[in-house]
Each structure stands twice: as structure tokens, then as C-alpha cells.
Image (cartoon, rainbow, N blue to C red):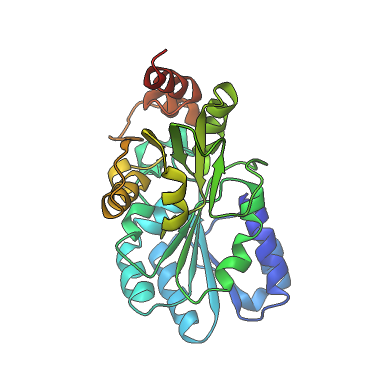
Amino acid sequence: MRNLIINTLLDMMSKDQDIFFLTGDMGINLVEPIQSQFPARFLNVGIAEQNLIGVSAGLANLGYRPFAYTISNFLIHRCLEQIRNDISLHEYPITLVGTSTGFDNSPLGPTHHIVDDWGMLKSFSNFKVYCPSSVSYAKNIVPRVLSQDSPAYIRVPKGNPINPYSADDVILIGSPKSEVAIVTYGGLVQECLKVHEANSKVAIIVINQIFPLDEDRIIEYLGGKRQILVVEDHVPKTGLYGSLCELMVRANIGVNIEGLGPTEPVFEVGSTPDYYFRRFGLDSDSLLKKCALIYGH
């Protein structure tokens, strides 16, 4: 999906002279076409992520629409003060594009496990946060953010999944009458789809715009449920689980809800995200067992 987003951006730069692409020394063998075709609107600031944000803000002040690209944890954590002061407070329409999410960089350890990034941005109310679950949503995301005059963060998981085939912000897979639903996004969607394939009684609610939420649609899809499982590659209390708990209290929805996600740093080294999915019960086998217990068999 990362390649699709970058290539879409390249195509749109030929049509929109205001788009400016910046990178923090990331995207080797991917971003060179942008540099070659639009050298005046391309800048590699080097491994200096705080500069990446500051320069993007200066370009926005000149009327450009900057896209700032690097690894998600460096983009958000290292630059949080700059994101607040230089982007959010000025309401600049800058788009942060973060590659790798959750446990995508598994072997690199907890410093590169990106499980507490977008929750930091929820306090900046003018930000919109997207985490595409499939290529059909990813291919529309650049024109989507360009049509809006607000800051945005695109959290890009690795891979190019085809399903779910939809560009909607919220997608219901399965029967609206299902008593049990898994709510998920991004890199864990494929694990959750395996659960529905094995047990069609479990509905899957996929959320592509994770902040702010499409509250009306989510409330509709939660109707009639007796158990909600929120499955995410982010700390639950500051992630989607926390957002849904708040929404359900405000909307007076009396449904059992459980947040499943990384709850502590993990220093054991796993070679793939699957190791950490199993570690926190986020893999399809663990989820199927949990759903079987809920249904009582």
C-alpha cells in the first residue's frame, strides 16, 4: 500500500503544482521518480525528523500542500512538539505519511514497534487519522486528504491486501444481526477476516478512518451486539478501544466491550508480526477460541 500511495502522489503532482514531497531519508528505490520529475518540489531533509516537520510548516505557510514521509514512530514520537506547535496550532493542511505500523518492524525491537503513535494525535482535534486496510482504500486516500483543508496522518501498514474491497471509512463484513463483532483496522484486518471465514457468525467491522470516527455508522453497526472485541496493533486504552468506549458511553450503548492489543513493551525478539500477534492473542486462532467461548462452545 505504501508504493500505491507514493505512486498516486507522483501522478497527482503533475496535476497539482502545490503538492510538495519531503522525506526523512526514507523510501530508497521508491521516491526517486518524484525527485527526478519534480526536483523543485522534493526535499530529503536527512535523518532529521523534527526538521521535516518544521520545513513542512514553512512550505505550508507559502501555500504548498506538503506530504512528509518517514517511519511512523520517528515521525510521531520524535516530532510531537513540532506537530503540535508547527502544524496543529496553525491548522496547516500538512499530511504525515508514516510507513510501518504495529509490529511491521518486528525484529528491531520495542523502539521500532509502532504501537502508541496515533493515540498521541487524538488530543489534536483538527487532525484526521487514516489507516488503510486494503489497496482499494489506499488508492483513494491522497485525493481524499487533498480535498480537505486540515492536517492528516496516514498510518500505512505493510502489504497489499485486496480485501476488504471498499473505499468506505467503516465497513461491515457479515450479518448486521451477529451477536459478536470484532472491530479492527490496518494490519490486523487480515487476521480478523480469517475469523469470519472460519465462523461466519462473527461480524467484522473494519475502520479505515480511525480519528475522528464516523460515529453514526459505527453506532448503527454496533446495534444488537452483546460482545464487541476491539483488535488493534496499538495500546488499547489510547487507541480504538479507548475511542469506542468513549463513544459507547456518550451514546448510551450497553454492550460488553473488550480491548485486545499490546499492553506492555516486548523485549523478546520475533522475526515477524505473527510472533507478537500470538503473544497478545491477536492472531486468528486465538480470536476464534475467544469467540467460541463467547458463544459457549
